[in-house]
Image (cartoon, rainbow, N blue to C red; front, top):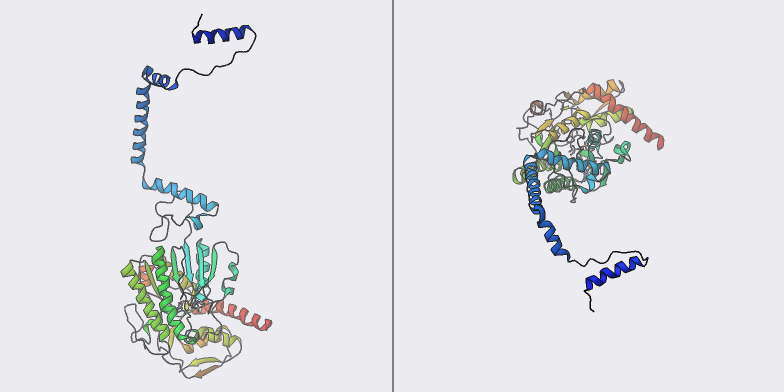
Length: 430
Ligand SMILES: NC(=O)c1ccc[n+]([C@@H]2O[C@H](COP(=O)([O-])OP(=O)(O)OC[C@H]3O[C@@H](n4cnc5c(N)ncnc54)[C@H](O)[C@@H]3O)[C@@H](O)[C@H]2O)c1
């Protein structure tokens, strides 16, 4: 007699158990899909599922609508902070949104420190540049010095050796370079007549091609650009003191024109990038500056007099010594440059100390500071030497809230100490 299959299976399982064999699960013979459909459709489960999805979508939309921009920045900033903590942020996150001031956009959440800026200082191994680097590092910025060491010295930055936020690139600004940065202080250019007249074509190339390259870089990465121009753009001025609106009296074919006209062209290029490419720019017109780390024999009058007095040589005064200059201490200048970079105004701004001295008066201050018996020796004047130079700094006072604080009599001894160390340690090693 034939039996139904199910009965056979059932009976075999029963027989096996009866025979003392353990029972085991048999393979599911019911089809899964129909069972699943029946399960979902039963007891209004589908309706409840749809209701849940609707509530979740509603909550999501409400949250999206209420979230503010600052809360989205918080997410970015905290992930940046995390990456910064593992040392990756600056190298791998150039895409962090930055505003035109170079700072991160949006509000910085409480408890998170402001992330330092990435700043390039061309000519950063020189006299002014190295003091600027000191201040930027002290402020917490990451600094890249770009310098071909023509007049700059590695020793000017030796006290920062191994600093984790300082990089030095030996590079000539006449060649292009690509760096991811927020601000560019463009100082690269020999500043003393001895150096800029040494190779005039190279000087004008540095001022024109070098400035073009740095402006191009600023445009490409959206950095703010500051040009260190000079009071030499006023030439032998017919207006005294010099205000920024004065256009100057420059000999375009003279021996100093590689520098004077070079800087005037650099100003032109800077303004053209500002107007034409909407670049954020700043222009400083620097007047005579002195301080520690100046080149010792660079022919500039303060360094000349100090080195000569220390070496017991006569102080050389060119012409009748009645031409005037103003002398600003380097820390005042650096303060002015940083205020200009951080401020809202393009400039140009005169940055100098309005205290005016004749060369003979300066020689007297040097005698008083170093050696009252130092002799003065008169020599014929050099070509195109301006007769008068004194900045009108009203604009910088009003718009930048800046004015120099260090007088010549306070600043000179600081420079003398540095020159003494360098001159006499050089003599010991020779
Ligand atoms: N010190 C002043 O009294 C004074 C006055 C007016 C303007 N300035 C301007 O300030 C800036 C700094 O002057 P400073 O007194 O420190 O002079 P500095 O000679 O000590 O420094 C200039 C730096 O630029 C570097 N440099 C020159 N040519 C370069 C090039 N082609 N590529 C890369 N680096 C180059 C030099 O090696 C040096 O480190 C200059 O642009 C200068 O024109 C200075």
